[in-house]
Amino acid sequence: MAVYELGDRRPTIGRGSYVCEDATVIGDVTIGADCFIAPGARIRGDYGTITIGDGTAVEDNTVIHARPDERCTIRKKVTLGHGCIIHNATLEDWVVVGMGAVVSDYAQVGEWAVVAEGAVVKNKDVVPARKIVAGVPAKIVADVSDSYIKQWTEFKGLYADLASRRYPQDYKRIA
Picture 1 (cartoon, one colour):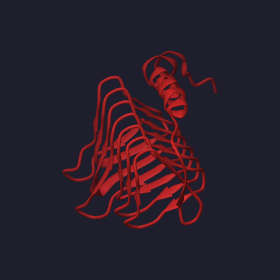
Picture 2 (cartoon, rainbow, N blue to C red; picture 1 turned 90 degrees about the vertical axis):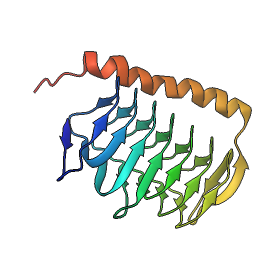
Picture 3 (cartoon, rainbow, N blue to C red; picture 1 turned 120 degrees about the horizontal axis):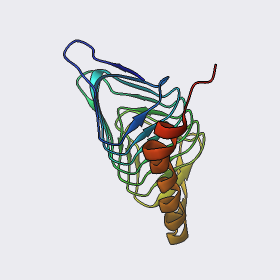
Picture 4 (cartoon, helix red, strand yellow; picture 1 turned 135 degrees about the vertical axis):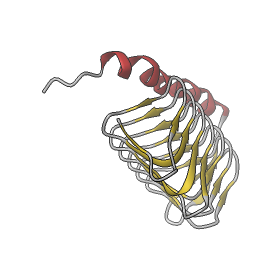
């Protein structure tokens, strides 16, 4: 794994978390317990501070960054889909951000909210809890149902399994 300090900024990775060897974690980054950081993820705390809560999955090619002397906060059990960008924003517990979505500066995404694939949550926008947003710019299109919450609670267990068992035990370079 590529974990780098930058000056006096040093990452902290929680117990049971797995950071793939070609993910990059730089500087003032705190990754909670039981997180999965997938191949190609880039988490840069070079100017600002990044906090990632317990049980969060950061999928392939996701970029997380914060402005100078500011903070990007991703709380617990969040799923960040392939290729999304989270910049200087706050994501509450259980949020799902779809593939290729962007959550921009000072945006806030409420608990159990969903940012659909390719959506753009603009600077300072607020996505209320249990709402689904889609489009460019992102607009509320639906509510998060109880069945969705049940399904995603189970899915998030799959990422925990990747972090705790499958990658540490079965991920081996063969060439």
